[in-house]
Length: 150
Image 1 (tube, rainbow, N blue to C red):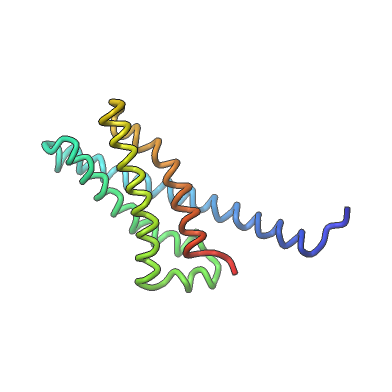
Image 2 (image 1 turned 60 degrees about the vertical axis):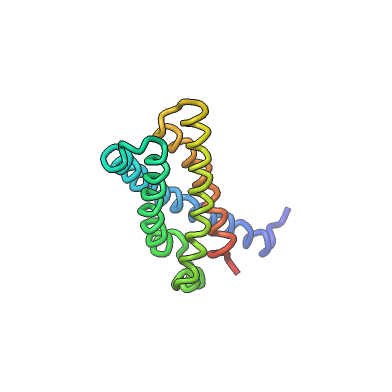
């Protein structure tokens, strides 16, 4: 079967998307380390006496640090197309980027509620499990809403 220009275009798009997702995993993984480290520091050293409320506050603060880091590296390293980068600059895009992240935060908080309060798992174990789900959500949400190819 002869390969058409259209087929080559689809293959190039798929290859670019796969490379982009690989970069997103690197950025998301390092953002996860920042997020989880801040979560641990706040939970164990700042809000240690607030029990489960301290966990939720610490999770939100860790998320905020990871979000800012992720946004900067997503613009610089992940979504590298000219139109994507131009579209990514600006307050409205950061707000949209953050809204996608906030949905991820809500998924994480829900996971912590179920995993820690209902099932009795350690909060860092639950955080790690939820990170995989949230990574996929964040990539798809940001790709579709903010950084889609034209």
